[in-house]
Length: 124
Image 1: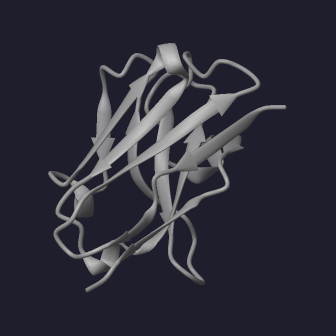
Image 2: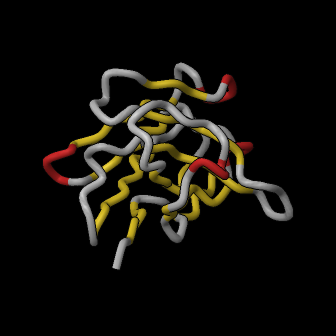
Image 3: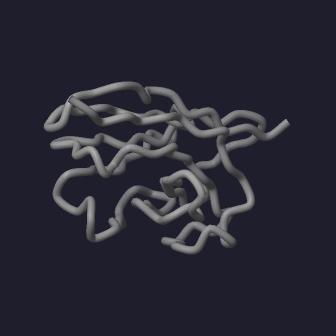
């Protein structure tokens, strides 16, 4: 069974940091482009960051550029999202996804494999 499992979410004060992890199982994701999305209540999932299969190419949503860093460890079949200088408007459920295409992908429809999500809450 193919699975992606996020962890690392939680409650943090504004200006704080969190590191999300996404561990893959059931198959190797080393050839996949991967991404992080987030979802606000009642809204569609929105793109946050992506990374190509090797980790050599990355891109970010404008709202998180300079604050978030996406990385991967293919030896561990794991994707990361380091989130710094967090703001209350970043409060959402964060999902990792795998595209089966090694390049950068942006639309949620390009990702057949998803994790269950992890909640991030930024508040005083």
